Structure formats: C-alpha cells, structure tokens
Amino acid sequence: MDIRGLLLAASEHSGAADSSPLATLDVAGKSALQRMAERLQQYGISQVSAVVEDAPSVDLRNFGLPSNVACISASADRVWRTAENAFNEM
Image 1 (cartoon, rainbow, N blue to C red):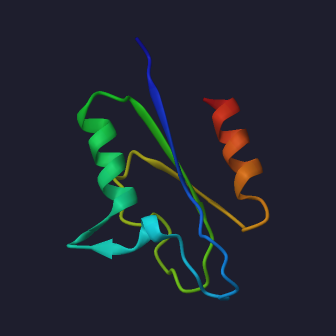
Image 2 (cartoon, helix red, strand yellow; image 1 turned 90 degrees about the horizontal axis):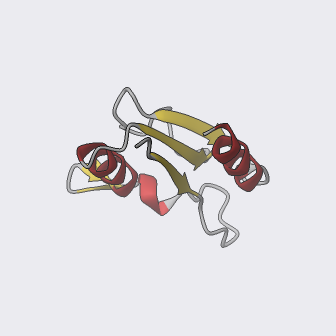
C-alpha cells in the first residue's frame, strides 16, 4: 500500500509583516512541522511533502525537516494553490 503525507504550514495573518507559521517555530529543539514529518515517516509513510508559507523572518529553507522530505515554499497568496498542486502531483 502506498500512503503519502502532505503537511501544510501557513501563518495566521494578523497584520504583522514577519509572522511566520507557528508550525515552523522551534519548541524544545524541534518545530511541530519537523516532529510531524518524522512521525509520519516513523509510521511508514513513504513520501512526505511540506508546503510552507514564506516568512521574511525565517532563514532556513528546509525548516529542519529530514532530507527526504520535500519542502515547498510558497508566498502567502499562493500557499493554498501550491498545496493543491502538491496534492495533485502525489
């Protein structure tokens, strides 16, 4: 059985110019996004992709994700369309 995972990390726009997605913030050494990707792989999900909204304050391109997780960066106005495209490709 081929099961794939798609993670989405978008910020809640409250007017702050540099609001990064909460899922990318480091808590106790890892982000929630990183923990979820690792957990999916731990349970046998073969292909994991993450669509992450761009934020000016975030410098890491892969957000600490494992090397075999595809990380797709998208602008705030394109994050849902990018997620839809990633879903269709899977």
